[in-house]
Amino acid sequence: MKTDYTPEPSAGVPAAEEGQLIADAGTARRPETLKRRRIDGGFVFVVVVALCASTAVWILKGPERFFAVLGDDAQMLVDIAPKVVAAVLLAAWLRLLVPQAVIARQFGENSGLRGLLLAIGAGAIVPGGPMTAFPLAVSFGRAGADSGTVVAFLSSWLLVGFNRAVVWEMAFIDHSIVGWRMALCLPLTLLLGLAARRLGWPSVRMGDDR
Amino acid sequence: MTLIIFSVFLWGATLALGGMAARRKDGTFGHGVRLALREATFVAPRLVIGILGAGFVAELLPAETIRTFLGSGSGSLGILIATAAGGIVSGGPVVAYAVGGAALAADAGVPQVMAFVTAWLLFSVNRTIVWEVPVMGGRYVRSRMLLSLPVPLAVGHLALLLPV
Image (cartoon, rainbow over all chains, first blue to last red; front, side):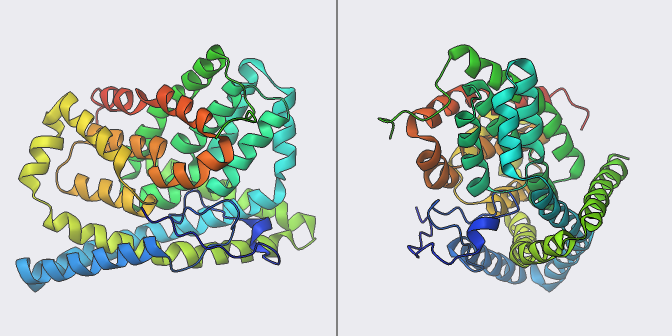
């Protein structure tokens, strides 16, 4: 599997501070390199698939179907464009206005059900991809949060993360389906957090762990 | 209706934060706009190509086969197949959601697609290997995954009860 690893020196890379705003932007990369390339393996793959599929539609189904599909897709793009604009602005301002250190401190101080619910709320709104979310989860553990809080935060970030849902999921899947999926997943994040707490895992990484 | 509520919420939150950033008068507003622009130049080409590609791929999918194995009548077996597919699909959100959208367009059932998306979110191979294991540690990731295993199946089966 290709993971697009670029061994560039991280010194002098201003992107490291700002990282990635939108969750899971398709270019998963190793934590040492916080810079994304605009064109990477994943993007090339999607371009190739799109070119092959459009050519195949033209040949197998004729130009009429080709243009019908193209029209539907164009309509979809027009529909989602304003949402994406709002979502990237929301993520950027949220990131600048709420420093991550402030969020992490909250979790050392809040345990119990309150801590779990806060973690779920934070996971749902925290802007940022894996290069932000996982280090943030580690900092929760270091600040004193238990494993239940960490699992609840990560599960919430994955399953009900608002930004990823708006920018990526709603672009391809009807918004009511996305909304229902998130509504079904929300209580499950609490169950996952409670279960992890009950199992009593350590919330910080042990030295011998690989 | 949900779309209106959602749009009001999204734009309300965006405008509120923009207002807070502007009131600081320390360049936070402009800095945020620049960050957002940079992010948009990354996101936009992926969305455009992804949506166009998904539309054409959906046109080519064998609807009859999709309906049999993943259609709304496929029930628990379809949810199980979709969960397995979501767990092994490689790539980022463009690929995963495009597959989900194309499957929907080719008559896959809503519960099956929800199970697929949920499984991809929880078990994405790329993200796990590249990010989660190095940062969180293998033992933690294995535990989280084992715990999360029933979640896509639960979501799919709960979705069977939905009116969508």
